[in-house]
Length: 217
Image (tube, rainbow, N blue to C red; front, side, top):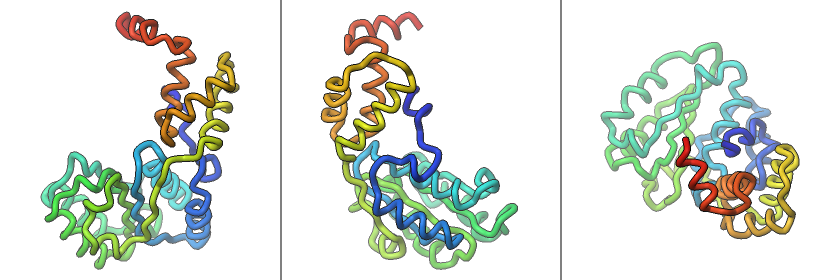
């Protein structure tokens, strides 16, 4: 999947979000970050940026000190308490900082959010990053304890630039006009645009051909 093959690995590779990237870069230079809350439309890089923060801040200790909780599945306090308490109470591995990412945090139940409010107040070596689509589902006490950034749809020019890079790297023949159409119809979602570009590269935008290809697998 091209969405994974061309997933940015460094902050400067991320399309758009220039103000936020500048803020993140300043914090990374200090060796510490605040708690973050990233909210907004799907496919605009919320989870991606959270992971890149972890990679660039934690370095070689990323795998050991970066914890991801899928809040769409682990929604209750009973599910998240052991992970969070273990992180807060225990020393980090080969480093001084641990990051816990709560992805799709708008799925967290009320009791889980109440618990996390207290956890944020009592953590020394742990930082939290929350991502969500709907910020109204995140209780204000958590919002108040985080630096919040809204993720809007990416600009067409940013999407076109990335799609052209992918097209050239894959050496596929797709006209610029087609790339511009894909970017426009993506609605600002880079993930949707890259998925459509891959489909067009295989099928020439012929959905029947695409269906036959997958039915053979």
